[in-house]
Image (cartoon, rainbow, N blue to C red; front, side, top):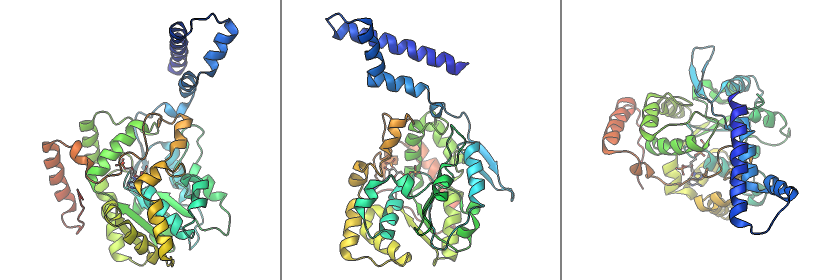
Amino acid sequence: MMYVIWTAIAGIVAAILLYIDYLLNSMEEIDRMEFEAKLYLRPSIVQLLSNFNKSDIIRPKKVYRMIYDNGFELLLPSREWAVAAKEALTLDYKNDDIIVSSFPKSGTTWIQEITWLICNNADTVDAQKCSLLNRSPFLEMASLRNNSALGIQVLKKWPKNKQRLIKTHLPFETLPEAFQTGKCKVIYVARNPKDVCVSLYYFGIINAAVPHPGNWSTFLASYCSGEIIYGSWFSHVKEYWKKFQENKSWIYFTTYEDLTKDLRGQIISISKFLGKNLTDKQIDVIAEHCTFESMSKNKSTNYSHLTDRGSGFKNAKFMRKGKVGDWKNHFTLNENEAFDNLYEENMKDSGLDFKYEI
Ligand code: PPS
């Protein structure tokens, strides 16, 4: 019912705006046909109307709590994502499948693009022909509209002889067995938790698949308590870090800050980990292609195609700032002190040391 009312209001608002626009801008008389044609053709108004017709901009009010058979609890954007995460456990994975994992907003897209190029002879021309979402499917991603597991659909249609690079944000404990036992390689990227929180906050504003983050301090409180999608940053990172210490032959652990400091060095380390020999020229090509400037302009990596589907990206960018240290523009002194204490409580014995500025 609310949906019908909102659609009607949007229609009326659009008609009024167009009429005002007509009165202000047009001195000549137009007939009714022209008026109607204008109404239907003016892109901004059509966009407004079509946005109201898309259910994916009706935000979920709460995240969905999924409970695994072993009792592990995971917060996901919706029930559809939980169904996909469950189905992901039953798929067949091949020895050469690679999974790129992270807590959201930690540099996943960056590592995906680097890894895809390492696995595909640094072919930047091919890379630009196809969106990263299709070159590197997002395992648990589901459509909010038609209940379909988007990542799994892409995986199922994958050509048999082609290597698969899969993206996930699932905690280690909930990965399919092939990625928990060393059958397949795992690349994990972590980022300092303050910049993750800021990036996630802005992403929450533009990403209609998740509940609205509210104001900054409310969101920070939810982030600290782990009551957001994928749960606690501390638990996520600590578990992958622990598994990495025990299994360095099949898990690679890196950080956003290390990528920022030495992109070329990281490309070399990841290719060694994957057993791929790259020439110096290929390493240079990948490093050049994967700078923030270059990936922000690249349609296959900047997710700008989502703008056109009314997914909430309209006036904002997925590739936002790409910096280490933006947290300083958001945390108050008190928030910062409280967060440092919380970090100490959760991470003091982990041996992990994040850079907060470079
Ligand atoms: S997601 O939605 O969870 O998969 O997002 P994710 O890709 O993990 O993280 C998005 C943040 O990474 C930044 N980014 C980069 N920074 C530097 N260089 C490159 N090439 C790059 N690619 C992506 C992106 O801008 C997001 O960070 P913020 O701080 O919001 O800018």
